[in-house]
Length: 188
Image (cartoon, rainbow, N blue to C red):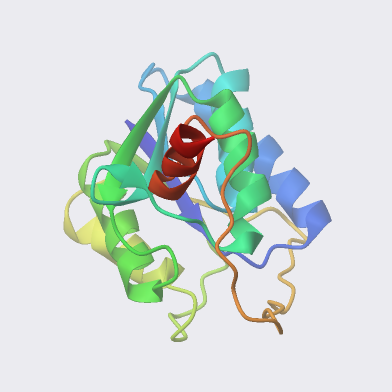
């Protein structure tokens, strides 16, 4: 499998250029391996579109709590919808999508199971929020080939943090029904 990780704070024009470059890189590979991505960012959606445009299968990894998908942070909902619409297979992995360390661990799991990493990385060191440099080093230490993708004139934007408390939100329509709603349906 081929996976992609990278900066979450790409400017919109940069994200379009990255998607194009991901497609070019995937088309150049003779290996028909499927794409594997953690479905929770604009970069994940761009990689998913590039994977499908290159004629490959897309496998999406979602966070789980036990045997059911975890509630995603609000900022992850739209990218998750986009990447799930492209997926041919969805896998669950137990991790907390609100925890930076858990997300880095999930990305490490992706890298462990892939044959190539496409890293959307400007070469900057890990800064406590962005772990792209760590993930590149993690892949290289395990002998996973890394292709750095950073188009000319690419820029990053400051990440905007939520100002309101997080409310549980589900992808809709959802094939998963919460226990409460099933109980409510029975009593109706």
